[in-house]
Image (cartoon, rainbow, N blue to C red):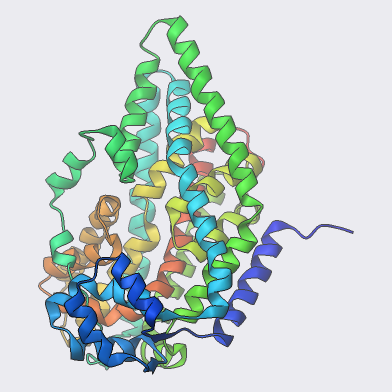
Length: 470
């Protein structure tokens, strides 16, 4: 019997997960087990005593539970403890039986990221050779990232001005979001943050730009030591990379199970998808259409005419990585699968993929840049603000710079939107308008980010004279 291809297994898992999540929606209630979980999270007893008034009550949606919490607790306690309380009150036995598969899959992928990036970048950069070669490759990579992000932003800007999804939007349909302004960083902080004070702390805290900076430096200076030492180190890191790729291929086998667990929980946790789509439908359509045009028209044209490669064949090769990106909403967690697909199926050398893909996963954010531009103009429309040409241009360039700096910031997408709103004088509270659909749209923009990274690897590999399988 012919084995079902992995991308079909993933697609089947995706569909089954959506059905499962819709059949078993999540509810929220406080039980004795909930209070044990609150104790573990060190939630103060004074707060737990207040929560006792909700005992025996079930809440069908998170929104209803959130309203009840805000009626009981003052704002400062909501900010500090709401996450722990919601987690403790989460109740969905059928989904909990399968959600662990998604958690295990994500943990396995995250386990691979740092050793894979370190070994691949160090072996790749040391294989590039001279500083001139490294500089040329770096310039090509950054040029591609800036140009494609610019195209993505312009696409989003044209469509959001054409459809005007924010006109008539209900400002009352808004969620509260705390702590975004505090998480903003200045340009100088982001640049200085690239240089790690302690590389081991950077690894422990997943500071990807710092890890990439160290790996590039280490790989470059391997070529500057004696031949005996450089051959040993290059052989060592190449061997580590080969082992990491074998582990990645092993983890990939479990992708359908992992995606089933992730998506089923995500769908089950969504409050009333119908009303959400009806109220924010035009905004979601605008973002998804813009992402689709960029992914299915702009990037394939670049691959075809600049990279002289077959974009459809490359898309087929990337199917497993793209469906994983869609399900996990994490280009970092998808990186091991992206590297495997680009190298094993599309034929890009490790020298190119090890440099462009880790850098792309942290810096190249076409989908995020497009989303930020559309979101900012949508918020302006919702508040009835007519943006001038200068303000629209400011949004374009701020979104471009913000997407590059986003990797160094927690809650990056939402934080960078506040930077754009500040740049054109729009109310920061407008972020609450888009928060309800952010998780859904995050799946689409992450897929676009990963697809753009893979296209970068193909285009740059061809520009370096490589023979590819596409």
